[in-house]
Length: 320
Image (cartoon, rainbow, N blue to C red):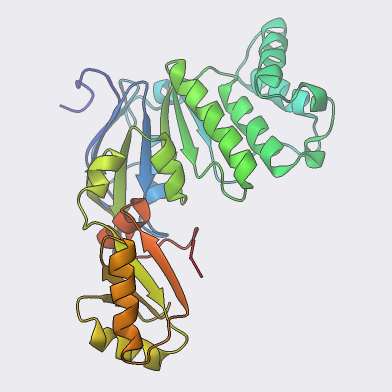
């Protein structure tokens, strides 16, 4: 079945990987359609990087069938590698070389004719707005420029499928959005993107389909909207100054969900003015002071928490 699916760029069935007695991937199934962005989400240690390593032939699966670009990752490793590009969390550029020299080195490693390598390097430098910095050492590049150069190096071989393992980690918001536009442009040109990210907004903005990986298993998969519909609706998040206030508030609001570490309560509600006023009046009646209040409509943060039991720590927006 795997690999025969019409339009699949990546297909896996029963993928399992363990290290001694620790199971990292516990029989996962994937089907990534060609020309789309597929995002794999999960808390640290869920198995995201191991999944990427198997799909990119860096690790052999213990059991299961995996086909990438129509080729078996175990039996046809060279063919898979010829069809893919990989950009990891940390830029693999050579700091001692200029931006142009990094691209030419990649072209040389791919055994491209010199003239063709130079042509591709010029085109990529222009495409990623790095032409002015082409002659400068990569060590002088900003984080965003290094990420763009790293991705440009991946594109020298014109891969049909690109694996982006947390490609915007550490970037400022502006650089991250620039990278998003580049990724969208690649997909518009027919490239398939397999994305792992710790930024839920990134998956929400980019991905055609999202899978949530937790403890080595796919616990949910679908579009962002489909995943959001799997959990309850809007809620109010209350944070308290100390544990005593949290305890009293939890008794007053028995339908709430508490977070001991964050000293917060999550209270079901539509977030409207009337319901907020009623909620605060109820707390005032018991002399409970609220340190912070925020209103949440369903988003991928909520999906992540509901499915994995882990709060996303990368973004926190509160109304004080």
